[in-house]
Length: 333
Image 1 (tube, one colour):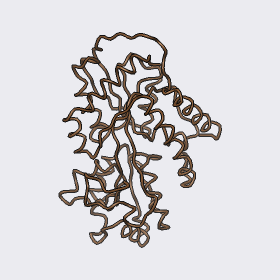
Image 2: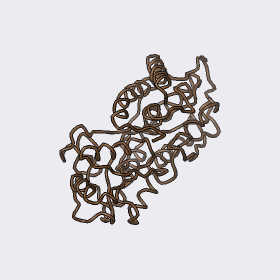
Image 3: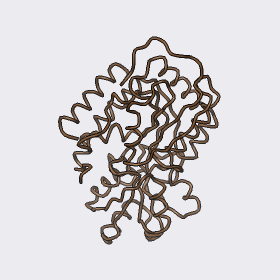
Image 4: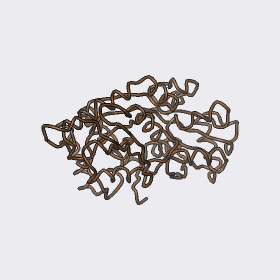
């Protein structure tokens, strides 16, 4: 994104957050009858954390006072951008709901010269979950490599095999991998995938050395020893992978990162619709089976008001600017 474009995005986000909303309409009333059908849009393919979250929540929404039937639609591609773009011009009655990781809204404005969406194209509804990231290796990396420093040293010795994948170029796990390499003076080649699962399959098959991904995406493969998670990005160890040390524990200070998923309506949604969607989604997120189900994917279930989500977006958008500049990545690089 150009300097002007990035400043415009940050300025627009800040102004919207100060009002508590992004593209919020001002109608004083909305139909309170349940919708027949709502589509929850995710920008990633089936099997990953984003898709699983959507499907769990969709189950909780079905038959609610908000909607009778909730379906999940996977609009994978362009690192999650296609899903966000699909909100432009979409119905604002609550029948189209976007679920997206933070990256598309707080990192992409710093790395793309042009984006096909702006803050006004989405209306924050609620946070959905928070999660950390792990660096996971497979059979292409010797069993003697047991820590992140071990892996970085091995990469330095074997530069042609210093490769890692992530769910998308310009995503948080992509940048974590780059920062890990920079910390040891190792240039690791990044391979972008359409979601974590294809990358994990390549690690399992020995075609790829490592993957930086949400910890939940790799968890199903850890117990059997097929994959080894060498480190994770939380400020403390995760209850989901308690035996995996943090990057900080391994001497990599400042390597503390988490991300969130959030639910959004298209820009221009009326206040009553947003608040009804917020209530329905938060109710679904509080259900024990949803909390327990998401925990199996390494997701901590959370929720928020629309205003809290808008402010979180603003803060994260400002945090990632200097990090992206340090890494030097652009979508054209």
